[in-house]
Length: 118
Image 1 (cartoon, rainbow, N blue to C red):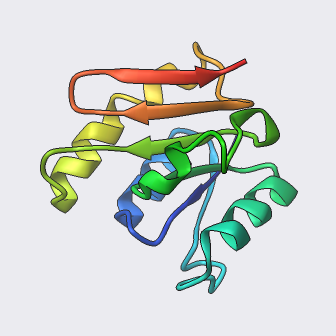
Image 2: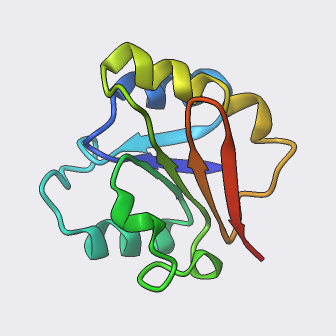
């Protein structure tokens, strides 16, 4: 599975995924900082990468229908500190082999994960 980490997230999330055996690139790795959402998601689509972001625009399934993408993960928290975001994401890694991400939107919160898609 391949991932792209949005510029609004700590690079440690990419490192966690790489250490778990996944292929992960950051938006910064590809010099895409400041790119529009539509550009980022299209690149993810072409590269068959799951986008991981804080950008709640990606939770709008009318704009970004999950079935058109390899997956979208949106992290939501009450606190957006680096350590807190890393801790929220830590609970995602064990689920990657058990739950489908392809053509799904995962909204990951502190206490639950909501999954939308077919």
